[in-house]
Length: 96
Image 1 (tube, one colour):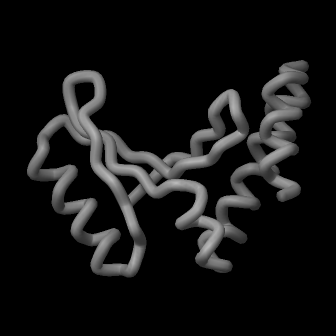
Image 2 (tube, helix red, strand yellow):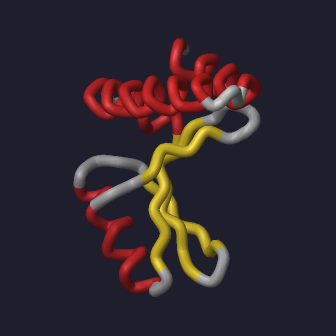
Image 3 (cartoon, helix red, strand yellow):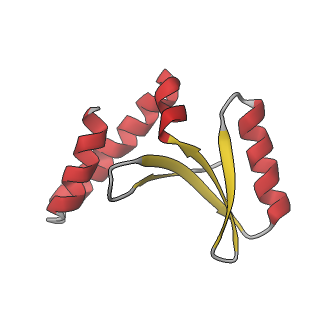
């Protein structure tokens, strides 16, 4: 399954995926929970979002390493596009 890395304005990170059907979202949620992740489910924009929060990411070294790789790419992209505020928010979390 694919999940996107999201950094919000307070520099908090979540892994997210969105599904239109509740059944599909519940299947993903169950797979994540069976893999040992404390994932959540919430309604969002005509569908459902499955998410893994920052504290869960921080507990798993391999997952944290992969997220850091993505954050590095996101930081470089934001910096190259002149999006200084976004680059700072990503850098703040990436270095923690």
